[in-house]
Amino acid sequence: MQYPPNIRIIRVPCSGRINPKFILSALRHGVDGVWVSGCHPGDCHYIEGNFYARRKFTLLRGLLEHMGIEPGRVHFSWVSSAESTKFADVARQVVSTVKALGPARHFIKKEAEV
Image (cartoon, rainbow, N blue to C red; front, side, top):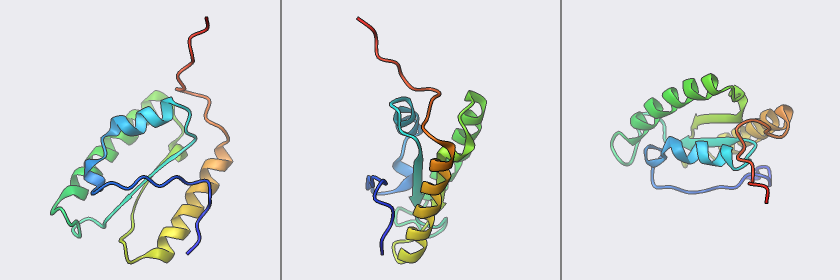
């Protein structure tokens, strides 16, 4: 399966291990969009990690909205390892949504001028 080449995949053992600070840090350093994907709720190899992830991402979504970050900058989905077609489809959808928003301009850490 092919997916857009401008996605950088960072593998983690479980979506429940992703700290919302990682997403905020990526956005602060100029990433145009973030996509987090994990096992379907109830199918987690780590028992209930994706339930924790779902709670964290729901809270993060509210925080990002409060901060003025466009909703299309951060995406969450549930795709199992056996769903390669769905993975590629969602990847294309995420890339097109983020491209439509254009480069990120808010929340980017400015380098100190010397």
